[in-house]
Length: 118
Figure 1 (spheres, rainbow, N blue to C red):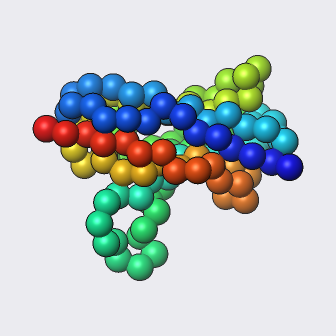
Figure 2 (figure 1 turned 90 degrees about the vertical axis):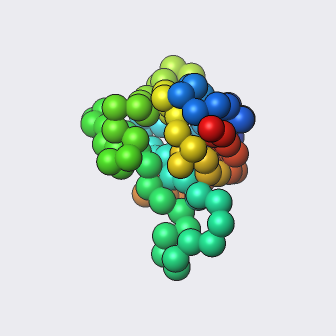
């Protein structure tokens, strides 16, 4: 049974860094598109509750939402079957619950809290 287990969240000051990891089991991360999404705090407009952050395709192509470009890096460790999100120069607006997802969003890990304070 496929499973994604996320780790690495926490509370930091603005400007600091965090690295999220997502350990996959039951499938190979190299065989699927892998994604990070996030849910900001508070009430969000319908359909915008979970917002796309980044993707890495099976070909290794990476894409990012505009607000994190140059600060976040998505990567995939095929040996450890793990997805990562390196987050540098964090801003208060990055505060959210982060989710890793895979294979056309068929699989999703548990949310992990990232809190950035000023």
